[in-house]
Amino acid sequence: MKEFYFDKTEVLENELAIKIANALKDAIILNNAAYLLVSGGGTPKNMYSKLAQLDIPWKKVHIGLVDERFVETDSSDSNEKMIKEHLLIAKASVANFHGMIANITDEKDNITLINQKYNEVFKDITVTLLGMGGDGHTASLFPSDPASEKSLQEKIVGVLSTKAPKAPVQRITCSKQMLLNANKVFLMTTGKDKYEVLNNNNKQTLPIFNFIDNKDDMEWYYSI
Image (tube, rainbow, N blue to C red; front, side, top):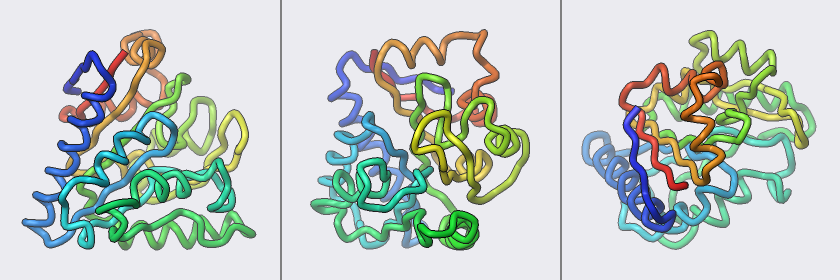
């Protein structure tokens, strides 16, 4: 994994936004479309707002989620809500967004519907942006969760249901292999705690290491 350290988080956000933008523009030149999978959480919010201001042919960009909480899309816990507020704004407001909630009343049916949609739309992923929790989880692939562990061990390409250790418990996530199939995979973290998790050899059984160990050209952008 290639590492890029920044003294200031603001500089990290600027550089990563430009890096993602360039990858999207290159894909559009080659294929007339680009496909971006994004993470939720608080860490990338400002970076998304900066990315949304950049000159990209946004109408040709398809944006999906790395993972989602099984909640209403207007919930404060919804990744879709956060992406709409911080990324699908300004110049990026015309991008094509594909959420992960199609049937909030039936979790099993929702997984079926989203699995079909994501396998159809995101067959050729340009960029995957990952984050990481302090417990070493990434996307909604968690330590000690049977469904997460199965996805981490197998080369399943698609969307699955997992359980988080805290509420909202029910999660939807792209599989490890689907996320790794992207042409570019970026990991963004801030803070000393997350830096220490990624530099602790005793924790290499954590979900994030299944990505690092399987994608040599993965790029880690971080500040402490």
